[in-house]
Length: 91
Image 1 (cartoon, rainbow, N blue to C red):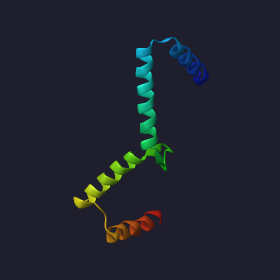
Image 2 (cartoon, rainbow, N blue to C red):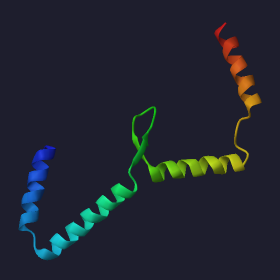
Image 3 (cartoon, rainbow, N blue to C red):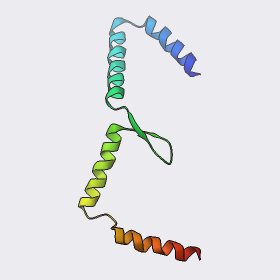
Image 4 (tube, rainbow, N blue to C red):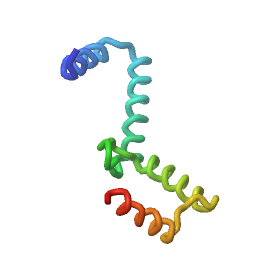
């Protein structure tokens, strides 16, 4: 079923539901819409192109900060040593 067909079917179904279910659907859609507005796409993953929300980026950054506080990082000197080996491997 295509997206257009699904939308038409959902519209038809909503026209036929009772008020109680209509209120529940309305509340659900409002909640979904609010979350989308509050947590909109802030960036895209460079490799996959997958959208990333502001809350997802915040969680990633918080984990990165925690890793640094645990001492899990590379120094500039570490990078220099590693990058020096790159040239050796290609010769």
